[in-house]
Image (tube, rainbow, N blue to C red; front, side, top):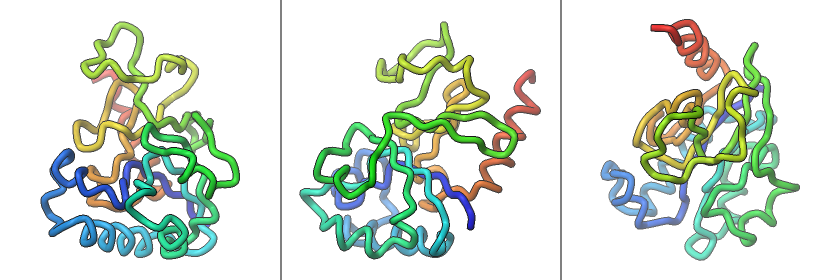
Length: 185
């Protein structure tokens, strides 16, 4: 069993192609197909997926068929994103606004929106102010798609930044180790 981390697939959302420069896809159907293939290339039955929100647009995709096509979808720890509505959330046995998680030696919290450190400007005025970043080593978030990898202590799990693959826990630990060891540079 391996843990994986990801966010912001937006299955079925045709407009995301333009919003997030997903111009490597022919159309929304091609995007959905590639994202399902890449999920299933790395995630195997029995794996656990920590999902930081914005899975799909339920009015544009059959969620039951989508989840049936994703390996280990019954093992998703789901964090509600700003686009996740009741039609999506009902498919998960509970969901969270945020969720503490231990990643290697790091105490993290999984959240949809990034968390800015105190005093850091918020250019989009939409970060999560309810989480105290000083309580965690890192915040694992999504929401900002391809804009940047890091926002203070928030690492962006949006799949655009990882060639549409979920991060394995091993990959994520290596990234967090690097950031932790180079934080003072």
